[in-house]
Image (cartoon, rainbow, N blue to C red):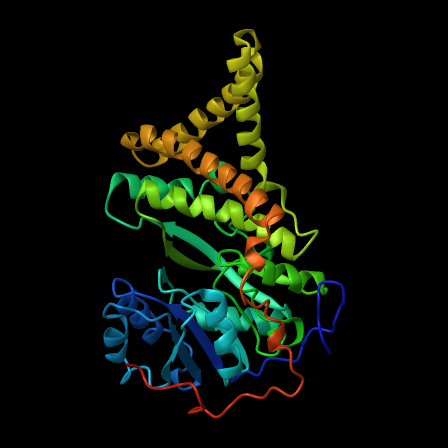
Amino acid sequence: MRSDAHTRVTLPREPISPTARVSLIVPVRNEERYIEQFLAGLCAQDYPAERLEVILADGQSSDRTLALAAGFRHRLTQLRVVDNPARAKAPALNMCIPLTTGEVILVMDCHTQYPSNYVSGLVNHLRETNADYVGGRVETQPGADTLVAEAIALALSHPFGVGAGTYRTSQGTGEGMAPFGCYRRQLPLVIGGYNERLPRTHDDEFFARIMRHGGVCLVCGDICSRYFTRPTLRSLCAQMFGNGSNHIATLMELPGHFYARHYVPFAFVTALMIGALRWLCDPTHWMVLAMTALPYLVIDLVSSFGIARRSRGSLFPVVLGLFPAMHISYGLGTWWGVFAYGLLRWHRRGRLKTGQELISAGCRPPAVDGAGCGPAR
């Protein structure tokens, strides 16, 4: 049965076997800084190694990523590498899903540290709750040993920075969306895979389609990974700008997919621009700008002071500047998304796929040494 945004399908809910084989899909590109740490973490998983399949989707790395990965073949005997000429995550996932041989698929990221019970814990939750997608909490860690990197990690785990009730800020278990999770292999073959038109928000759109078809996405509070954030202010602002713009592309691809917290920075930046324009045209209209900027500044001061008090005082001025830099970058990105994706529909140019190509009633897992899966290089 084909699936689209308007046709509801029956999601696969087959019981998960106690001895389920799990396929780990890991998109990589130039990850020599993290690949050894990541693969060592996989070796330490308490899930039986003979039931773990690891597929690295390499986006044509130009560094030592594959050479370093090859050093783990004796420990991860079911480690394979496939080429990802598109160099992006969504095409990598779509390419690897039909190649998997496991009953469960788990998507992972090299920039993240996982506890030894990560695979077993998520698979157990998937089995016991009968949810359709299961992920864990994410604890942000500095991407470098600098004051700015530390401040970035703290800002990205604070409700004022990313909103309340997200996988970064919540502690309990409940329905929600989280990265690095698992699902039954047949799920993307029923609802469609990852939308390649959305380089940053393909996972959000995938989760939204699961829920639109009546599925349940679960965030498990007892399973927590550690994600290494962007290390510099410039890279953080670029990330925020991209996230803001891509949520507009997601809205265009899946109308009705709307979370207010994604558009709060957009509203803030818009109010600032209106207030600034009115003040420039007539200085007596300064109240419009002040009514937007002053409440924000108060919240910024209180939030930054709370972070500094819990960690160290030298972080206060850094975090104080980080919050507006994050929110303004995100809001400006949303405005760019309205123009580029809402009006010009740039995300639909070229031959980017929506993931519908994965839907095939007759799709079966290939043999372990199936075509397209060569040894680690």
